[in-house]
Length: 226
Image (cartoon, rainbow, N blue to C red; front, side, top):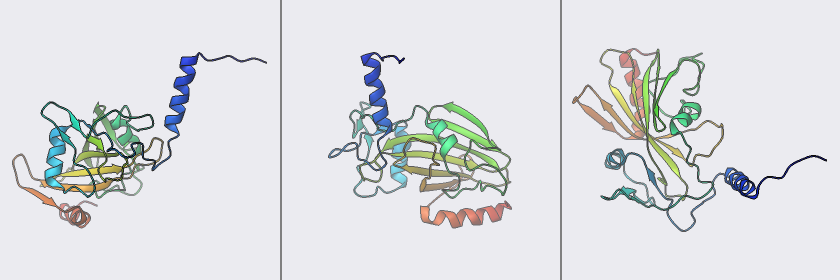
């Protein structure tokens, strides 16, 4: 019989990693206390709160003058905070799950930005951009916190979209991934906020998320997009 024994410290680390990876979906890792928020862009988070009402019973996240995040605290094993949110967006974001000016034509060959047809630029671990013949878009990760108030961690990020059409506006979409888990499954998101901007310092339109699908369809028709 052949084999080997792992050092005690390595064995403990392996057990902890295995336990963390086996946390089932929907398990509350912080029972009785708020999920500790992780904020990457405090200014954008404040702007988002001004744009979109907070659902009850969610707790509003804030960054103090001293740079502390409330609610705060240490994270526990199994709480999913990937090293690169940019790579997660590229590999897993389901482009069919939210209204978009960049509607994928038949045969485009990609349900995510990692598929055929997209050129990627990873600015850092929390922001990225993608370009193709149908347009360009960016994603910036804003915060990871319990937005819905159900005791589970959510991800908030903001996306911009532009298409190569005359007089086309820039669209700003605030997107939420609810209770994401590690793995290869596609990541569906929910649209929370929407803006339409024309030029630097130009007009700006803000509308309810429920109105956006119809508005984008009408905008695509106006711009002559297929």
